[in-house]
Amino acid sequence: MCGIVGYIGKRKAADFLLDGLSKLEYRGYDSAGIAVVEKDGLRVEKCMGRLDALRKKLKGREPVGTVGIGHTRWATHGRPSDSNAHPHSDPTGQFVVVHNGIIENYLTLKEDMLAKGEKFSSDTDTEVAAHLFATYYHGDMEDAVHRVLRTIKGSYSLVFLCKAEPDKIICTKKDNPLVVGLGEGENYIASDIPAIINSTRKTYIMNDGEIAVVTADGVRLTDLEGKSISKKIYEVNWNAEAAEKGGFEHFMLKEIYEQPKAIRETMRGRVEDNRIVFKELDWDREFLARFNKIFIVACGTAYHAGIVGKCYIEQLAGIPVEVDIASEFRYRRPLIDENTLTVLISQSGETSDTLAALREAKRLGSHTVGVTNVVGSAVGREADQVIYTYAGPEIAVASTKAYTTQILVMLMFGIYLGNLNGRLDSVLSEDLVKGLLEVPELIHRQVEDVDQIKVFARKYGSSEDAFFLGRGLDYAVALEGALKLKEISYIHAEAYAAGELKHGTLALIVQGVPVIVLATQEDIYDKTISNIQEVKAREASVIAIGFEGDTELGKYADHVIYIPRTGKYLAPLLSVLPLQLLAYYAALTRGSDVDKPRNLAKSVTVE
Ligand code: F6R
Image (cartoon, rainbow, N blue to C red; front, side, top):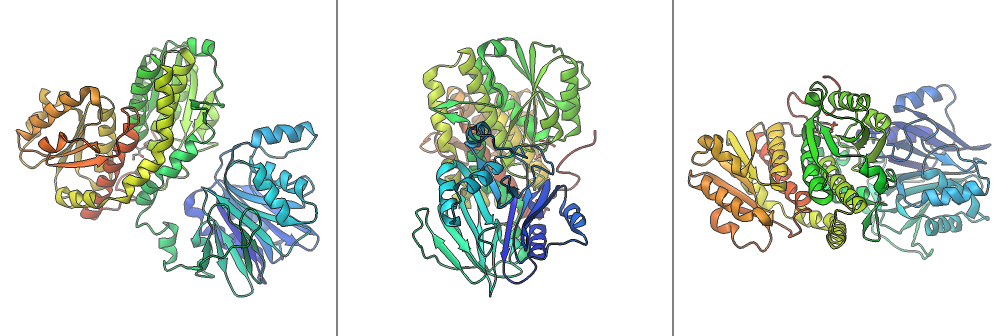
């Protein structure tokens, strides 16, 4: 996700900002910029690309001012470009902001401003905040910031700088991280501790709705009404490397824990009055009626999300769906035409096979929709329409939070299509949307208590093989569970539709082989129980995953991992959690390099 740094003191701000931003590079970014208070006004310098490109741009003409803010951008609104890079200013250049997050009502605000003749130089939501800041400024920076916050809706860490009050920086946050660092005769702001840890360990970890007015000599904290508040200083006791991972041992674990936020961000702005809206698609019933078939095409984990998507779309919208592996699809002369909708799922948006499949689908006349996590990626640019997942950058090679946001998008897409073509019962539709809103909290509850999973990982971590079973949506999730386990722990793992095992693979089930069985689908629950009995009869060790309150599973399985009870369509969003954690802790037990498993790359840009 984007990175923020701020400095006010006696040193050259630009040096501090560039150094601080470099400590946030691990988060991923596509452009960078700084704004520094100079004698003749606020100087903004920014460009697309790495920090080195910005350093080059500044070479020999570095700003000398001692107050400034900086940003590394990870595109959400508008593709990566010089003009979309932060900081953003009002048209006079006297008011500057940097922002992480999403301003949900920016379009409405921007339309009003355009109607008044205001000019914009970027496609970002953030520029709207800079315009508001200028409009609301009448000699009191704090007051202007309060008014901005009363006007915007969404999630943000925001930092404000203004030419008329050059001796202060104001910052605030909602649903995005922000810290204020405390120094001697200087103070700092950052979206994450690594950016400032070389200068101080004394910080205020900002809470939602708190505002910090930061000067070189001190920090004053207020609430949104301007009332002063006092806050405990938090002493950081991590080293810089641990700080990058937010205190987690690995990026993968950090990303597993980030899933509630990733889900919230991906739903943001897409749920209105218990309905799903995809403004980026804006289809009507007639447009959807064009399609008699949907293809979902992807690789790896994204392909598994596609299999979940097939269940959702077929069951909620009644449209036939084929799911294909991109490397197969591109060469197998798929039977598609202008009446086929092709959905390409790709976290990175740069996977070579998926991109080739997208081009092939377009060549055959299909309408294409990309589902990607990276704005400005090739899939994002080339698909006819794009639905973004807002998981934030995923650094660990093993995909976790990207997968959950992909299946979330698939569920929302299924509901959207079912509402459009009238095939989805309105009560079920409303129940699903209400249920979705509860998912982040339910995931949060699950990751709070992982002791049992650690025990299983230790117990079965030395196994050579493992099997994952399930039926329907449980089978789709089992596929992802097996992939996670093999890619990071190197345990040979296979997933089977539970009813298929007896047609051959049952020969491999012997005493002590761990078999992980998902049992969340009520309509086929009894069948799954029979499959558990089948493998128990061969003395396998069964770990079942079922809902809290299930009193049956424990009678058949050796162990049960209980997940919060929810509906059958929402279950995949919760049942994948224990599988991700099991893979993670099994990999730890075996001492493998969790974030960079052997032979694998994060983005596969070769065929
Ligand atoms: C596994 C994993 C891979 C990717 C696959 C596609 O954990 O991450 O299987 O899902 O390489 O990548 P994207 O989604 O970037 O197209």
